[in-house]
Length: 100
Image (cartoon, rainbow, N blue to C red; front, side, top):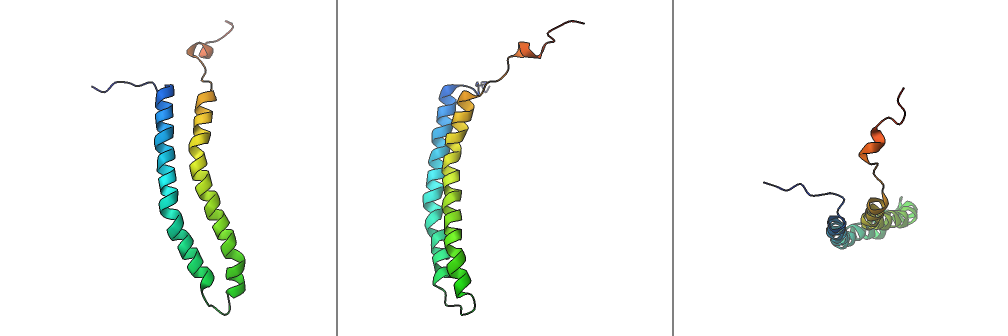
């Protein structure tokens, strides 16, 4: 029978944080180079009609890529901060305060 673990356990929160952060860092290192390589290929392409547009927009795409990976790595940190400092109301808050 599977035990019912408390989801607010600090140990489980830390374990989820470490696992998810490790996965996001590995994802970033695995996928950043191929996507950057594709963007670099588009940047070095010799297309006569679109050279200015490529030189204008490819740096923006690179910046968006870096920001997306930074958000992916920063998400576990924000989740841990929100999870640790969140306050769940106790059950007695749901009862009526005054009887009519």
